[in-house]
Length: 118
Image 1: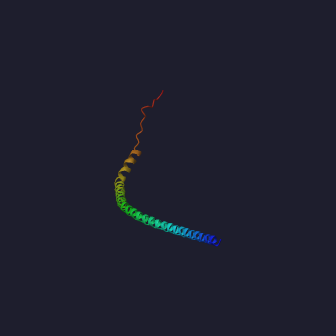
Image 2: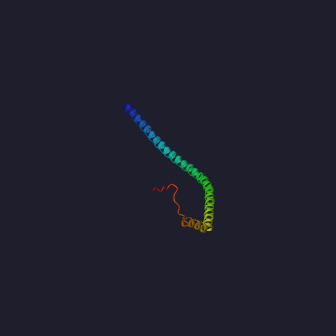
Image 3: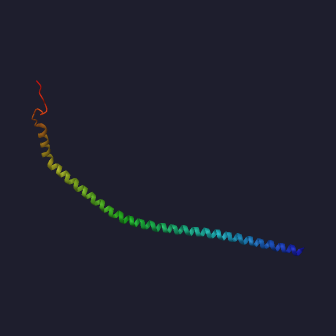
């Protein structure tokens, strides 16, 4: 009987050791998964920063040329406005005289479609 109880004790101890090893393996696995997740997040952040840096570089190159283009357009617009203003001041007097002459010089005439009935 003692040998049976001794065998049962050995089996229980072996089962406990196996259970402990399983728990330890689960803890290592969980720790490794957590570490792998942290490494993946760090790698993703690094990649994201790299891509954002490339994007900002390309955006700066493109926006820089657009900035030059907008400056050219603004200069052309200012030049056109100045030309129109000078043309307005130069021609305003003569146009006002023509307009007033056309309005004030009235020559009354009978309209050709008018019929006088007697």
